[in-house]
Length: 386
Picture: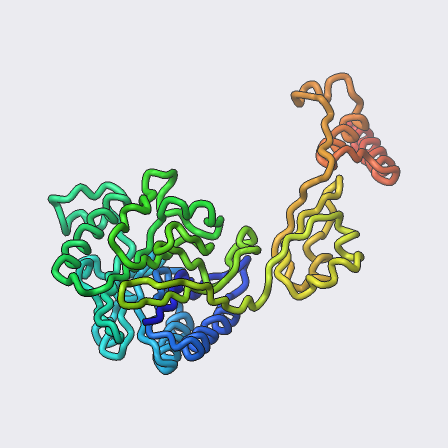
């Protein structure tokens, strides 16, 4: 049996205010191609199918069309809900979808009940663990101590092992959406944390006994053990993910279980790049021409903050989405308090010191000095009349 492990589709997510439906459609269209070319039997989507608990009609349409295309390519599909999904919405009509080879598991009560598919060597059981929010599942099992994700996953795996004991001849795949120790090295700021800190990090050993564990939630691919892997997200949803490959794990099972896993790359419709330089160099230097059609995050190293930087950058980089001012040299005036800044200074000197402070050491220009002198003179004349 050949399995394609994907996760974190995040249909409906925006990128710096831009819709990602069109580029995601391009990526999802490549999955049926991989299925046909590699004779994939099962495609796994390990949670966060949508980015919102209330996805738009267009997001539902894209999901439906993608699942239909994968089925027509010849693979069955196993889907679980993630922390971004509404389990009720994603799981609606899942019983009917299962009859068509699209197995959607969003109900925690299904943990321990496998989806069984067969190959030439016998049964492969897919045990699905949708995202488990401890506060929302404690009432189901009041005798269990379900304080956090780690507790919830330990409980889920205990149920799965009990089910496996009655099926000793079946190979087992666990599909889960959670944060497992080791995945933090591939995480990114586009991922909404399940909890703050490390209290809910699930040990890799929790999944001992499974032939393969297909994880979702972390947006970068990661191999935590040979049989425990994250595939990462289908698109780049943050500039911190710019250098992370996009795709899924192509896992092959033989009679004994997992035989091997190799990376199956998916297209990147618009690459991301961070460019760091002075504004004028970014606008004029030939070395940056290659990034004209990239998503661009610009870090400006100019001393004073350049005016109208985003608009000017977008004349060369239409897909510039983020601008940050990070001066190459940080001006230090050595003054600790506002009182020290203004004490004993004339109005003109106060203005010059203020501009040096906020413009990285650049004080008043000659036109600014002339303008300020006129304003101060007018203010003093008005005060004398009053």
